[in-house]
Length: 195
Image (cartoon, rainbow, N blue to C red):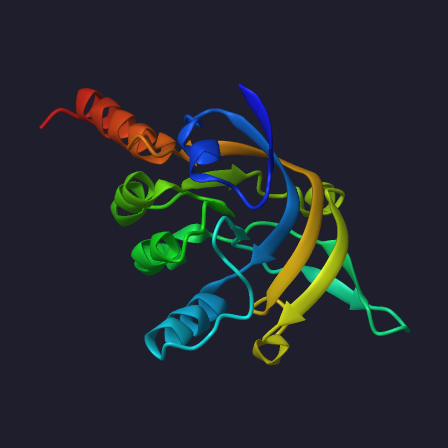
């Protein structure tokens, strides 16, 4: 099933999704990779304000390439997903702050499957190698936080219009296409190479 959703996302929006659904997003999308996740966790631990309201947010595990224009504003050039499993240690934190969608590549593991069910968020698979195509769904760069971490690690606030397509890889019902593929591959290997 194909769905177009507006960010901020509601819990009902994401609990209605199932693995294999195709999703497009409209609204503000934030990027966050390893360093941004660490910064967010640090601010939460210190009881300090986050630079953005993350309740209902969609977080893209991506390092965009942006060009600074003469007027000081930014233009997105390309944006592609980075490998998400590195952010697995933050699965619980993502749920606690109210993020409703993670976008990336390669899938995530059991902590994320558990947190998706418990907190009501989903993991969306972005097609790797489609950075230029994905950039077409971004209509403007709203702003950037933590640019001192470097362009890929900064937290970018991007305005999206029909951003995608993304495939629901982990839903709120404990279903994961990555876990299913892994289990099927192990069964297949066991039948090919019996003990």
